[in-house]
Length: 172
Image 1 (cartoon, rainbow, N blue to C red):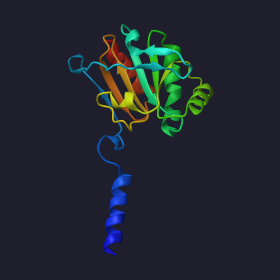
Image 2 (tube, rainbow, N blue to C red; image 1 turned 90 degrees about the vertical axis):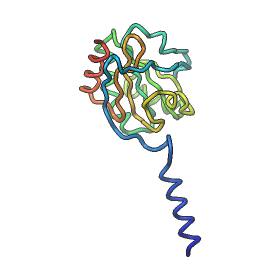
Image 3 (cartoon, rainbow, N blue to C red; image 1 turned 135 degrees about the vertical axis):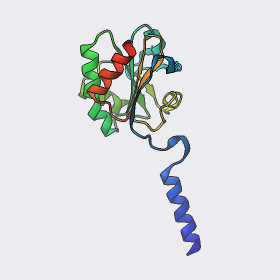
Image 4 (cartoon, one colour; image 1 turned 45 degrees about the horizontal axis):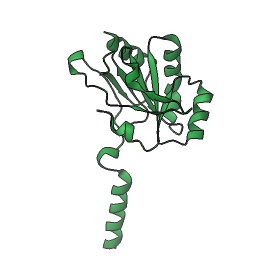
């Protein structure tokens, strides 16, 4: 009986996760200009095979959304991001498709009308490099100011209002 208890306890701990792979706590944070960190390098091949580097977008406010086709909250928030990309041509929107199957990701993007590029992050290593965003944080969104600094973080599904507040803060 004691062995069974130890084995079950170990299994529960393994399934619960630990360290950097624990589930993210949802939150919304807007950073004052003096508190903003630079965004690390984020470049790679997109779902359609193009090469994208977010640093090429410096000079504009950039919204970086981390998503996956298998993530139900990602599906819920995507219309807000698509609407932002369509209504604000001066704002650049960039997706980071994390730990996804390419065919499923392309189908998701086509179904939801996602016209902005999404970098493929097959192993989650790019998401792991982003400060303040846990690697299990899907969806999550970063809004970068024109200098390439993180002006806002949204852990969990982004609302239209949170996106607007973040873009306004990054624009100032």
